[in-house]
Length: 167
Image: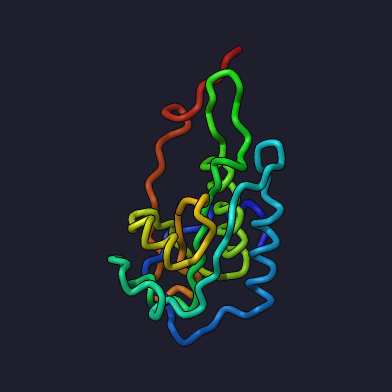
């Protein structure tokens, strides 16, 4: 799939085919794309956790559709390891993690897989479940698998509403 086709075809999918696995090769390519994402000052203040049996580990999640997918990927960020802008002390861990996660989601789309960005879950439960170091904080997770539903069309604001040109 070409880059702009990936951008235009990516949709949030909330139903997955539980019996159609993601291949190791697909997962490897997706994780490589995530690792290649830019981070501020190349600090790479994140950890990615692959959950191969979501039903076993994530029974506390309210979005039960997550448990249909063969895999779930979670991302965590470490503010202590991130670049901080000196002018306003803005910590970029959350920005970096979001960029990495978006690379991952776009790579999954290029592989013909479905995802949905989920942040509305208990971060402490995620951190405990994934057994990550104490200085990492949960950012988001996504089911990863094949869509069991047709994606809905999305409505986007116009260019005039979102973009300003200074001349």
